[in-house]
Structures are given as structure tokens and as C-alpha cells.
Length: 185
Image (cartoon, rainbow, N blue to C red):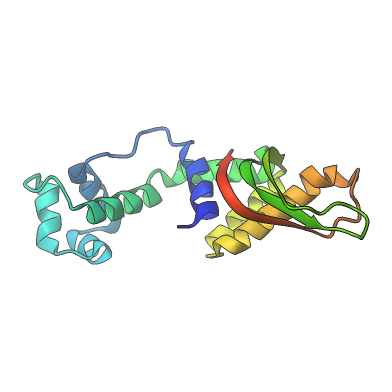
């Protein structure tokens, strides 16, 4: 599971103006419309074209849990692309992104300062440039570790160094044992 990637996706989904279809029939019809046919949907979901047609027609209603989860994930991934793009654009140009995290955080600093890792609960508004870096990295297929490094760098600058007003000699922030993570736009 990609905690940081999923967190970014959930933040963008909060901007949706219409609810995502909940049941298999409407979800399947949406996917057929998006992909231009039942064959493409069947290939994507790893099922027979005939079974896709049954869901579209309403004769099949209740997919297996694994299929239901895949179908929902694929629908959400494609739902309201303009709204999604608008939310990302606002976050990366003017709004920024808020990170709410409860995790073990420590840092590398010169000798004489305390660099003890400890669990911290931080809610920090990050400037638009960090929202842009996170979304760009996610779009480029970055791993959760890479997204975590960007978030740690943002927290180093914004929270620990207070935009350059303190802890100027801080070298690196470590972000581990994430217990809770949420992003908000």
C-alpha cells in the first residue's frame, strides 16, 4: 500500500462535486464509457467480456470482493478528471497542501544538538512548490519512499527551520514509522 500516494489521491478526491458510483452496474457502465467498450474493461479488470456485459445489463450485481475493489479503484482513478486537475492546479499555484502526520521524526544536525527520534503529531501547511513537487513526483511514478523524502524535506524547511528563521544548520529530517498521514488541499 502506498501511504503517501494514496494520501495525495484522497486529498484531491475531497474536491469531487458528484459522488463516485457505489454499485457494480453504474461503475461498470462508467468504465465502458471511459474505455470505449466492454473488451477494454474486461482486459483491464482481468475478467471475461461477457461478464462485463452482464454487469452493464444489470443481470450480474455483486462482484467478488477482489473484483469490487479493483473496479472501485479504477473508477475513482478516472472520476471527474477536470475537477481533479483544477484541485491540483490550485494546490500547486496558490493554495499549497496541508500535511497532517503522526510519525517518528528525527534529524541529522551538528554535534551538540538533540537529534533524538520521537513520535510527533504535526499539522503543517506546505507552500505550493511542495504540493507541485509531490504531485509531479506522483505523476512520474515515484515510490512511496521518494514521496516521503519530499514531505520530509518540506517539513524540514517549513516546520523545523521555520522558513530559514531557525535551525539553519539542520541537515536532514527523517520521517519513519508513520502511524497516521493525511493530506488536505
